[in-house]
Image (cartoon, rainbow, N blue to C red; front, side, top):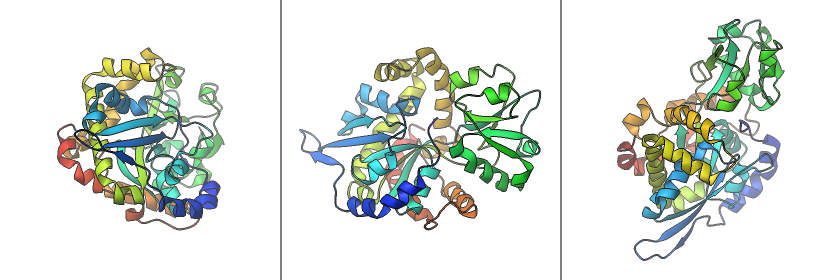
Length: 344
């Protein structure tokens, strides 16, 4: 699972440098084509290639980017790659991060990036427990030991605050790379994404899930971001990128088996059987009631405002608390509204 929080020290140390660099470079190169200018767009992932780019690999394979005059290059990330810094410094035009707090924390540290699409309408981050000692609502955590990743402790703190639960009522411990702490009784809940089918299988059929979103902390996942400069100077290219990506995700929804074949072809390290299972929740988070109304990739202003406030209340912005307009741009969504609604 990708980290929820970026390294704040690195943000602060690089903020001034990156802020200056962002104004001097042109990150999208456009070259003349026969019918339309071809835009070369590099997209930096926050983690390794996975089903989080199912729609992108489908769109590349089916020629949807070519139709929009976009030549897309997907660049996988990893544990030692700072995807936010890569976009801010001009190594890539577009980035994708696992969770929305990464964008607002970066902006709060002075890095000039903004979210412009949300791939998942609900965040899959989940608290897993067993039916012998279930945690179905935040109040069930009182008196319990919760094991979570170090980078996700802030999520638990925000969840407790949102539900009026004092932190000293819950024991918080660091979680390892698997879910054994739940199975061995060392903790009454562990955390992870419920799209990670392989990790969930070890819990068996008696697992109980409480999603972060359903418990009151509403974050976006698979968030697409770029720089202020890109939005100002290349909004048309970002719109073309968005329409092709939306079409790819829509095709994947309607042709899941073919989409998974394309995904595994692009990333041979992935297990086809597991990805076929994961495609159901992944596409469920990508499409729903909000996309029926507003189209794939849509975002809600109040959802962003609520999460900025939650992090501000917990003192997570060490440099400054960003405003909504600092963190999010809705211009690309507005420019592609009619096209995306047809695919929602």
